[in-house]
Amino acid sequence: MAGIRDEWQPPMKAVHAVVGALAIGLSTGAAVYGGWCWWRAVSSSRWFWRLLRAGQAAVVVEAVLGGVLELVDHKAPGLHVLYGLLPLLVSLIAELLRVGAAQMVLDAQGFSSAAEVGTLPEDKQHEVVAAIINRELGVMALSAAINVVLLARAAGTA
Image (cartoon, rainbow, N blue to C red; front, side):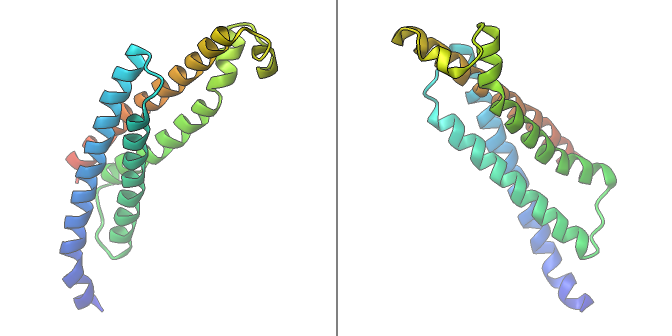
């Protein structure tokens, strides 16, 4: 059994490294493009969301690969494991904050419900929606930037 583990561990480590580099690249792209969209208040940013979701998926795959390596006796340093798992937590917290973005914008503008926004003229409704989308975009771009730092630290402690 140990012989089989020894045979596939080096390729598995290489795949882990490649997926890690991909996660860093995708998250960097999402952070930079998302930050630019947020700064410019660009609400139609489909490419940002695609980059972000691809980066998040790469982080999940990376964590799974790292977990498999840990299970087959390749013990990584504790900091590597910590920095490798924190992006999952950051992404989860960011998603929770994104869900609350609409209510935060409504509260800041003095609305008690989304139904109140429906009574506004159409151009004002669009302004509120744009503010909500911009807040969501900012939260998620910031989470991608934090993940880049954490993933880079994980790579540095491997």
